[in-house]
Length: 401
Image 1 (cartoon, rainbow, N blue to C red):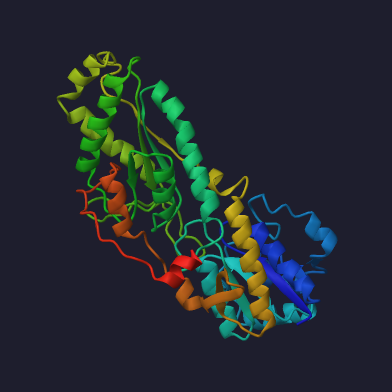
Image 2: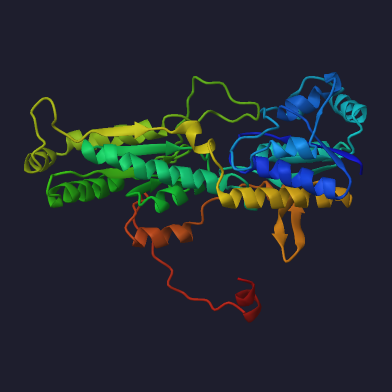
């Protein structure tokens, strides 16, 4: 190969500029020119209309700061199959031919990966660098570590305002139907409760946990200050299994409903129980907080950091992983291997798997959850039984780690 294109697609996150730089630098080592196709799959479809593309020369690569989140290549949410143009694949191929591009490196999540599979099946050589802050692919994905760190930081910082006002806070975060980032971010910041899609929430259980811990903290404080912090994944379900969606918003390009209001829903459920609980006025009086008609129950508020968890700076881990999978993606593409996802580079070998398998959604392992339930975090269910089995690793694995 002499010339290749690089695309970043789907949601932006940390580590993406590492993918771009890793791919382009490895291409340069092999004497291959790498070009940015801007605006994700929208740019690929419109490639035939472009007058020129930006080549990732040594000088241009110097301008890319891999410590920053987001992508120098730009993004869009476009599903090629849904474009109402019977000649869409031929149009894309003509665009690639126009610029002499012999293959594509595409960084994206499950939706972007499914489009990559589609392009491969239509004769366009592609390799997938896994990217999604949701951490729900079968491989590790660029962006997850950065997002988890930001979630943990925001939750930790929110404790100051929550404790000042004796508020109960529910912080809603992205993740769709996998709760990895809420789970790991919440654990890292010592959240009191973590509500994830994998476990339908029994709000009576959450309420009792909140009530006991919240008032205990306040009564044990010499200044009667306390809080209770909850991390809520956007795709949660209640005990009946019903999901919380915004019925007034249209579905996105990939047919997904807009998940909205999980944090507010949790607040409503807890507030309703606080108002109906006849023991709360006495608890409020003991804490010196009760004012009839004004401050009769604790305030429960939702906070949604939204896109703040995917912007700013990348974690060092995501920059490292991004550069490695970017470089690995080029190596595979240059060897004529297509339709695969880079899993990483270990012992000097590029590890990869079929993209159709890589993009299958991976959920939180509930066996891991039981460990943290035993440590006192509420997940909105009766505490699961912790597995206390032990397992000795083999000598080879022990040396590897």
